[in-house]
Image (cartoon, rainbow, N blue to C red; front, side):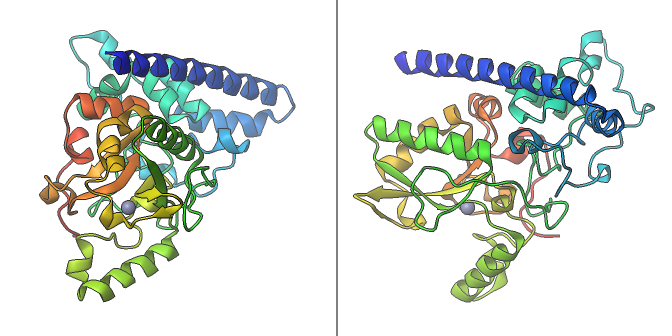
Length: 332
Ligand SMILES: [Zn+2]
């Protein structure tokens, strides 16, 4: 009861923060427009208004550069002719314009989901096809992106902005800014709840780093087939998004390995509470035929509080099922 109220309060606070960020972003755009760079800004706005051209990294970085982002070809063509399928309820046909469009311009994934009416409403719009004109699940800079053995990262060399979280990491791992902030909030809460210290074993990994990680697994397991069950091939890892975190349990400054995480008080707390902070346990081991991965209780994927909440409330086992996507048990 108390924890439900706390979660609700935190969600309300987060929504207010998002609304403030959204207003600031709109104000910035307005100021930019009046600063005699109207042609450039107009082009940015136009690409943002058509949907997935918006750059979720731009706001935090204070830059509107499209660096590292895939071209429009990665998303469904937003041509005027492909209007949403007519439905009995007129309001359903109005997903992309209005509040959702301005949230997309702000570049803030969570703000877009809130504008859509929350995680469950956003998911429904995507699954039904009503969001086809402005939301794509293959754009690596948005928090709803799905990467698996059938869905490589496009472009292959995508590299997000990353920062170093305050959470202890033996290797100084980095994450996308919003994921880093959420991780710190989560590990602090775990500590305050008496669950113990949590460390970040691995966060963002570049394409090149994944080449090494995968080769190490092939060497350790004896074949690529065996390695594929636990390690993604380069270009297919959620770690390259900056939105995945491998957690370990720590005590007095010493951390265990990821393989020792299961069964710890830290892992149990994470399994129950991660969604409150925007994270889901991506590979639970119950649906290996869908995800292509064995159980990895240490591997968390940041999807934002709204989507993570809809995920656990809907009792989904995989991110693929959540979006109504086909299983990805192995590489094509
Ligand atoms: Zn991982």
